[in-house]
Length: 479
Image 1 (cartoon, rainbow, N blue to C red):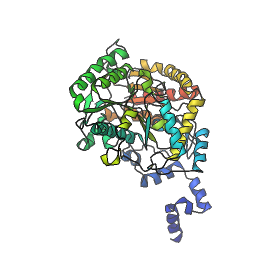
Image 2: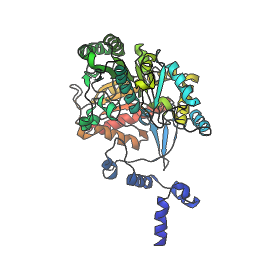
Image 3: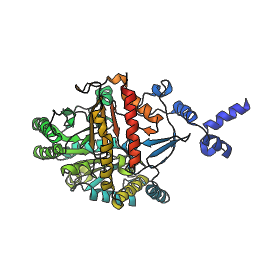
Image 4: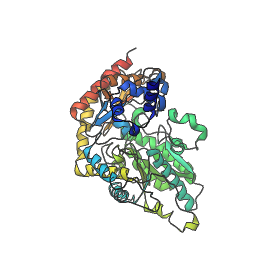
C-alpha cells in the first residue's frame, strides 16, 4: 500500500520535484501512456474528445521535431504536411531561430509594453513597416490571429467615432470567410461549423457573396469570375457605406473555408471601391502572409495597401504566439490627442510584444532576407503542382487548386454534378487516419485535402506526402 501511494504521489508531482530515477521512468513512457495521461487532463482544440477517448482516433504525443518531421515517443516519424496548423515556415527546431531565442532568453524574457519597450519589439516593428505594402507605418502587437482581427475591427470603429462618424458601426465580410474564434472575429466570419452555435452572442454583419472560383462556369477564367462576383460587393458598399466601418477579407485564399481561392483582381477592385465609399479595408493575412501565396504578402499580387494588415502564424516561424496589426499614420493620428479627450486606443494584452516571440520573428525575417526563400518556394510550388496534377482526373475529385505553396484537392461524391459527400460520413477523416499510418500528418478540412508544408520540404518529401494522400483518398471514397 505504501509503495502504491508513493507512486501516485510521484506521478502527480511536477517533474522538477522528482528524482532522477523517476525522470528515467517518464523518459521511457510510450505513446499510449502519454495519451492516457493526456486524456485525463487536457481538452484539445477543434476536437470532439469522444473521438479520442472512445472512438479509436489516435492521439499522438510528439517528443521532438526536426525540419519537416515530427517524432513520437516510440520513434515513429510524421511528415508535417500542414506546418502544424499553418504556422511553421522553416522547419521544426530550426537552428537559426533556436539560437536567436536562446540568446534572447539570457537577456530579457518579457517586459510590460505599456510605458516600456525593448530592442526586439522595436527592431521587429521597424522591419515589418519596411517589408509590408507601402503606407503601413505603425505596428500594434498582440498574441494571436483572432486578437489581431479584434484589434483591427476596434481600431476601424474607433477611428470613425473619433472623427465624428459614430454611425459607422457595421462590417462587411465575405461568404465562406474565417477570421478566428473570439467573438468579434467569429462574427465577421461565415463558416457555420464554427459560428452558428454562438450566433446569439455575435454582432450582426453584412455578408457579401464570395469571389472564390470553385463555382465558375465552364471555360470561365478565375479573373473573369472574380470580377463578375465583385458586382455584389460594389452594390453592398453603395447601399451601406454610410454605416460601414470596414470590409474584411482573407486575400486570395479562404483557408479555413475549405481552401477556396480567388483572383487578385478582386482585391484591386475592392481597394478602389473602399476608397470611393470611404470604408476601411482590413486584410487578414494571418494564414496567407509570409510567402504562402507565392509573394511575401498576398496583397502584393494586387498591388494594393490595406488600411489594416493582420499578421500572425508564420510571423514567429511557428515558435511562439505573436500577432501584429499594421496600419496607416493617418489612422494613428485620429487617436493622437490630449488624454482628456479620451480618444486613446486602450486595447491591451499582458504579453503584448513579448521579447522571446519578437526575437523569433526577427530570426524568421532574417531567413527571408538571407536566403532566396520566395524564389525557392516558386520551385517547390511547381513540384507540388506537378505532383498533384493526376488528382484532376480522379473520379471523386472536383478540383485541384493552387495558390503558391497552398494546394487543395476537393473530394466529391459525384464529379459531374459536384455533389459533395454527406459531411456525416467524414471521408476526410479517413484520409487523415490512413496518412498517419504512413507517416504523414494531413488534417483535411471536411472533404478538402490540402498541403501547406514548411518551406524546407524537398522533392522526395513532396512526392511522399502526395502519394500518401492519393492512397488515403482511395481508402476514403470506396464504399
